[in-house]
Length: 196
Image (cartoon, rainbow, N blue to C red; front, side, top):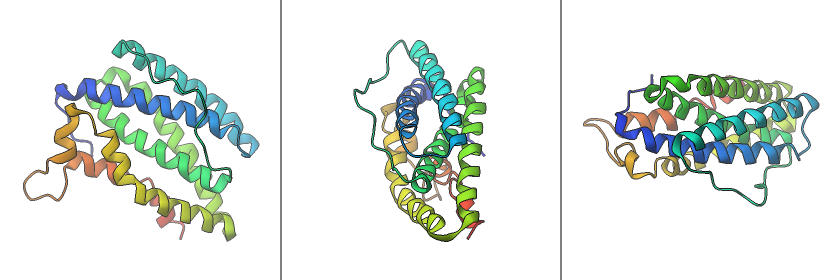
């Protein structure tokens, strides 16, 4: 369940999405340079086009450009680790897309794209796990490492002053703010629990 956000959060969420889409675009470009299965490469090319469209859309909405990198980020070279990495970040992006659509229902196509991206990488991770062996063990280890970084990652996404309520405040009787909890427990790794 995604809780409604006050309209005062709209710009902050849009700005975070601008940063996230820029990061996703560069990550997808970098992933294409790795040794990935042929069907994955085709998906990554289409994914890059979608991320570029989203980025332009956010730049127009905000009247600002994204940070332009001069070098691609380092990505894991082993597919089993790269798949977990992309799955984790796409799932986090999906949770933010759900928040965004609460504020801007007109941007629901972005949520739909995020659902497709998550579904694709979830399928790829499940395939790795089903085959078992060293690849599956490596994927599980990568997931544990990603999970350890998740709280810091969520805090970075909530860094904007417009989102301070969700970063720092806790409703009475709760250990964390429900929005932050929903993002942090996005279910990104339920695939590992159901596959050993």
